[in-house]
Each structure stands twice: as C-alpha cells, then as structure tokens.
Length: 406
Image (cartoon, rainbow, N blue to C red; front, side):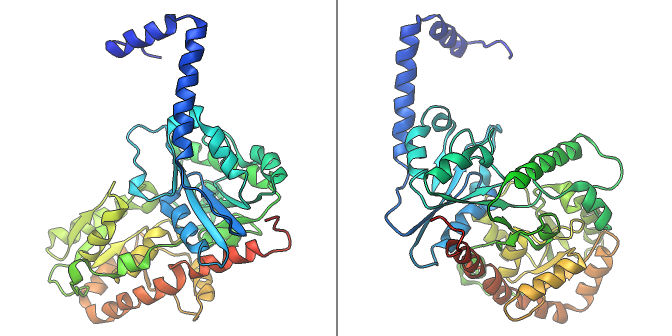
C-alpha cells in the first residue's frame, strides 16, 4: 500500500494511534450511520410474492426484470446494485431500486439482511452472494440462510461470466477468442470456470438472458432481455425521422467492449466509407443509458457486434428505436429467436461478419427502400419480445412452480 501523504494521512495516523476503546466507539458510530443508510431502502409490502433481483444490475437488467415481474398479479419486485470497487465506475446511469454503498457493505448490512430474509424469492445475478460481501462471496454460501428463511432462490446468468471462451472459439467462425490468448482472455476464462463451479453446486432454477447461452448452460430457462420500449420508440421532440433518407446516413457503433464487438474490423470499414463520403460514423462509449434514445434516433444504422453471434441489450434498444440494426447472429441463434417469437417472426437484424460488413453496407446504401422496411419492423418486434411481457411469463412460471418455496 503506498504511503499516505497530506491531511488525510495525518488524520489516519492520528485515528490509528487512539486507544482501543476509542476505536470501538468510532467503529460503533460508523456502523450506526451505515445501518441508518440501509434502513432508508424502499420497503416491501405484504404481497404473496416478494422478489429481489441483484446484486449487479448488469446493463440495467435487474431493474427491468423487476418491473416485468410486477406485471404478474400479487408480485412486488425490487432491483439491487452494489457499489463496485472500480474507480470511476458509474454503472452507466442505470436505475436501481436498492443501492448498497461501500459504506453499507462494510458496516451496515444487518438491516438490509433482515429485509432480504423476509422475501419469498431472490434472483441472484452471476452467482453472486446477496446477503453479505456480494463482490467476494457466492450465492452458494447464502443458500442455507435464505432457504431456512423460506426464500426461493434462482440463479441468473447474463453471458460473459459463463460463455466458455474455448467452446466459443470452436463453435463460432468469427470468435474473438481464437488464436493466442492474452491476460484478459485468461481472466475471463477463469471467471467462467468459477461460475461453472457455482452452477454445478446450485440445485435451483437457472435462467439465462440470451439464446446463445442455452448452449453453455444445459437445462437453463431463457429470461428475455427487457427494455423500456416506449422510451426508445418515442422520437425525441416528436420528430418523425425515417432512416436512410439522408445523403450520408449516420452509422453508430457503441462498443462497451471493443474486442468483443469486433470494433477494429467495424472501424476499418466505416472509416473507408466515410472517406468516400458515403456515411458519417459515430462511435459511442461511456454514454449514460438515459441518453441512448437520443443518440439512437439521430442514427440511421446501428452496428452492434459482428463476432460474438448473439443478441444483447442494444439489439432490443436499436430495434425499438426503429433503427436498421446490423449484427452477427449465429444461424442456430437466429433460428431459436424466430421460434421463440410469438408470431414466428425472424428478428429484423441484418446479418454481417468481419468479411461481409462492407458489402452489406454498400448494398444497404444502394437499396435503401428494402432496408427501410426492415428497420420499420423493429419497434413491433422489440415490443412483443422485449417489453417485459415474455419475461413476466417466465417469472410467473417460476413463482407458481411446485418446487417454489414462496
């Protein structure tokens, strides 16, 4: 640990030099303040089903699933996010019902735990603990206390924490995990191995958020991604902007993880087309989610990822906004998405990989009316797949299953 300097170090050394009883008084005061903060968390009522989803709120999905769960009669649901130990991490501005600061995590968990143990259901993201030290412990360690209190526990897998890199490299032709691995891929695979061990020890229902994850988690149930479709469908200021009407269409790419999106290949193509005066390229990173509808509505084409082969949150958001979405969906993933659609409709997502992206974009620019029709299918498709109705049905089946303790 580097040496502390300045007033903070003086205060710390002074505090450390105090006698033990004084330390104890100080710790008690800090604990009381942290517990007071925890008691301010929104309470649950007395509904027959009371669900908490967390503790990560990855891509804001815990919050959106909680709102979907409340479509089920007799259900109250809240989302949970914990403050991370990553300097400067903001969570991209996603809403959450409960937020546990580091102060509460360290000293004020008792009132929070009492509330969790009074629930009927918990959906634990990525195998993380929900009762104590969620960033360091697993849900397996929480199971005895939760089940003793009559809480039914489900496990939710988002994707990268259990998408085996080696299996992906073998099954997907454009997989970014092919070739020699660096330290980042090694860390990701280590996370996968840890999560796999949690799933192996877990004897409750397991849910995954994207169809490709059914390949990696046998026996799992898909809990579809949910977005606030209305927020993305409504044009800012009531403007009716039709895609592909500008001479130089705006192409947007928003890589949260550039290597997982194929961003190098995407930008090689887009920079070339931009130099030719054919498109205007916009790259977004670190944009708060509240601002995404405005950026999407100011684009004609959105490129998600062209290497992973699976849909994500941006798939739902961009289609809801009526933008023309380009992404690589593995054939079996696209087929499964079509089967899961209530009307058997294929996702309105234009297929492209690293080798075909430029050809696809040039075709779009030369046949705009065809691709305007594809983009126009997006809002309706997003609504009946990702507005929370399908997710609510999945959660209702869990609440009403014979195995449910709640």
